[in-house]
Image 1 (tube, rainbow, N blue to C red):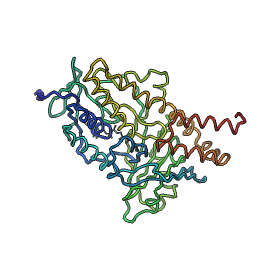
Image 2: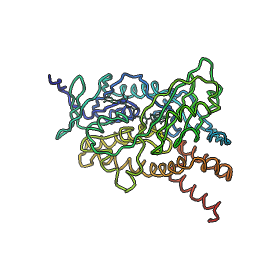
Image 3: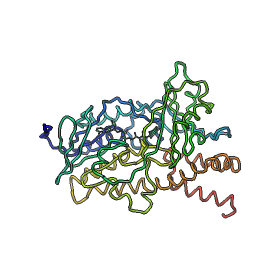
Amino acid sequence: MALPLHSCQYDVIVVGMGPAGASTAYELSQLGLSVLAFDKQVHPRNKVCGGGLSARIERILPADFKTVVDGTVYRVQFAYGGADSFIVEFPQPVAYMVMRPTFDQWLVEKARQVGVEIREDESVLAVQELEDGVEVATGKGRYRGRVVIGADGAMSVVAQQCFPGRRVRNIPALESECHGETPHAFQHTQTALISLRAAKKGYGWVFPKKKGLSLGVGEFVRGANRPKRSFEDFISHESALAGLSIPSPLGHPLPIAHYQANRRGHQWTGSLVRHRAVLVGDAGHLVDPLLGEGIYYAVRSGQLAAASVAATLRDPKRGLEEYEKNAEAEFGLEFRVASRLGAIIYGLPRACHWWAGRTFPDTYQRMLRRYCELLQGRETYQTLWAKILQRLKGPFGRS
Ligand SMILES: Cc1cc2nc3c(=O)[nH]c(=O)nc-3n(C[C@H](O)[C@H](O)[C@H](O)COP(=O)(O)OP(=O)(O)OC[C@H]3O[C@@H](n4cnc5c(N)ncnc54)[C@H](O)[C@@H]3O)c2cc1C
């Protein structure tokens, strides 16, 4: 039996209400468009994630986001196995910690409050492009809109159906939440730990939360593929985790921005916009390939997409491609530099941390500090890369 077609035509249909979808829907509704949004789950829902937000996110979120912040990080400890750690400390926040069920629900409520119609527990199964819009089918009905936003995460149905043949790169990442009966000493240090020894070609992290610790590993370079073993090694060797009983980790693909696919200049064309379909957040593979940070880019891509969709629906001469151009301008070169740094750091972790740290400790400490300034929004990957090149000239005699 054919599913009923809902008579109402929306300006925009948003698929997925994580940070990307909720931000896009909120902005679109604020811009005066009618928005219908779906999520296959019911908020508050869990998402496998460390829940670390770089402090620069405060520039793009409504100011009251701090009501859902679960901890603030002022210090970052960079470790490499038994070698000495480098600690970088600031008077201003480097990162905010959130619990994803609470943070995502807060974003969804923001969207609901400005008039977005939200249907939870309704999974989008198919998207069909029509001449003048799109038709979205769920298990419960068919809905029409002028544009569809794919904000449905790493395994996006919208991307699979509307962007066939797209090159994607998912890396394995594991995460565990450790909520002990008694608070763990690390919880109150306002410190995030990054261990370069934890994964073969990636890193391990420990983040402090109110009720415990979030920890995990991600492997960023092709061919590593042993995240479970890395996780076991990490929790058995990391002194900050000593004495803790750590629940088994959960895994989820992390869709990092693909440097190879972006290297030849215009490769982004068609990877975020096709006809009347637009991808944001993880669905668009907008995840930093060095750190694996995705929430900042999910929110920001949602804002960029909403502005272009609203402008295009008012003036079709503008074109949805404007979003792709703006995203490329804001993230493209950043991701390329991050990817280059990742190849060096994860390819040669011992040389980067152990050797460089011992041989040029002051320079190395300064670089780590600059990296934290990037998380604060005071540096970019491009300015950081320029400074690294300049520094390298010093030790090797070229001024
Ligand atoms: C182990 C791990 C640790 C991470 N740690 C961090 C971190 O500390 N900081 C950080 O910034 N990033 C981190 N990330 C990345 C971050 O989780 C993602 O980048 C972020 O969640 C992307 O948001 P999104 O809205 O694009 O997708 P999601 O958060 O995945 O949201 C997608 C939504 O779409 C819904 N959905 C999916 N399919 C459908 C469908 N067919 N129909 C309807 N709804 C659908 C889902 O239910 C979900 O609510 C981590 C990722 C992993 C795997």
